[in-house]
Image (cartoon, rainbow, N blue to C red):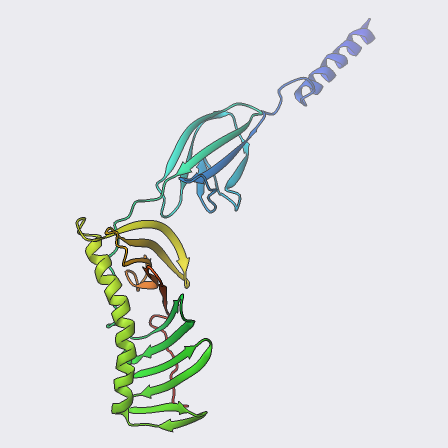
Length: 301
């Protein structure tokens, strides 16, 4: 009898031990996964979007998605943010063991159009002007401008063939003639340099002046449309399209302008594409302005 009681007691204790170890007792709570997809206003996936769910955080990948694992069942607010876009959020309820999907759309921040600045006060820059017409080939002018204009390097190409090259450093000047560098009077070269600089400044300032008027005067003959953000020539830019409101059979003009939207060179154009069309010809001038503030390293050859 005593042995039976001891045996029964041992069975009860062992049963309690197994229950305490999880054998048929409490189980670990099931966790869930939440997949968040983020799109822009045009339905394109957005990468690099910062996401938070409770204490969890992440960033969307190239496919616009991020998966939060081990999310406990509860109510959450999914929050999404990215520079240049309005933030977005959505309240969700996550159930135990659920694989939940969430889709968010971020709208681009509507920015006021920036006024364009000219280049006359800049220490240095590199400008490449490429002109092309339906009746002629491509002509290219490269201007390297340093030390507020006291150092210059000018090269002109016609159909990829170098036609002209010169250097100006302080009051000295050299031109390439028949394959040889020749000293020339500074005053003579300065007139030529000024002419090409005036061409560059005339093209850019003319487009800038029309643009600056168009963004402030709705009755102006040109209109401006904001296209969106792009990285151009290594700068973060906002692209604008300028168009004529007046229909003319003789000639029409449009301009695409990429304006730097952050940093020390904000409100400078880094690219302009100016197109003029007539009944029998089309001309396009593409201007890329880069290397603001850099040392051009211009030295006499």
